[in-house]
Amino acid sequence: MGQGFDRHLFALRYLANSKGQALHSLYTDPAYTAINHNILSTSTLTSPAVSLGGFAPVVPDGFGVGYGVHDDWIGCNVSSYPARNVHEFLQCVHKSLEDIFTVLEGKPLS
Image (tube, rainbow, N blue to C red; front, side, top):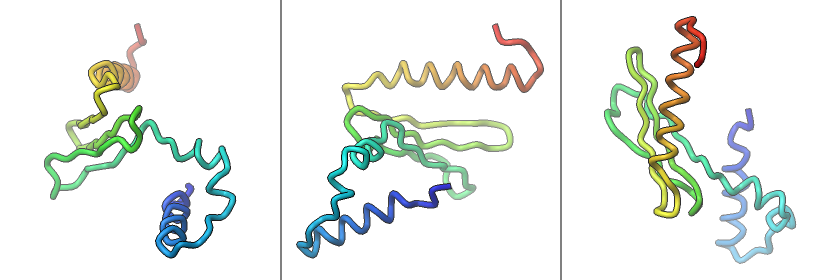
């Protein structure tokens, strides 16, 4: 429910930089740096107008995940920089979805 506050702060920083203005001390605070290191960057791509899409990682040690949830299938497209193991990440996504479907079917997790 942040309603895009991070985008607003990004825009204010961008405008200050583009006008040569000094940045507010918030932008040099270690907490601000930490909350802007997004390892998992996602975007919903569920639309009749979109049949395939992707989303890029926003930090070198991150993943970009474009995903779609439809009536009869769920899909995702994951990207990363070479330093990350995207195959291992996808195995974890697959296992998580299997677990969710198992629980929704009323079966015990193994």
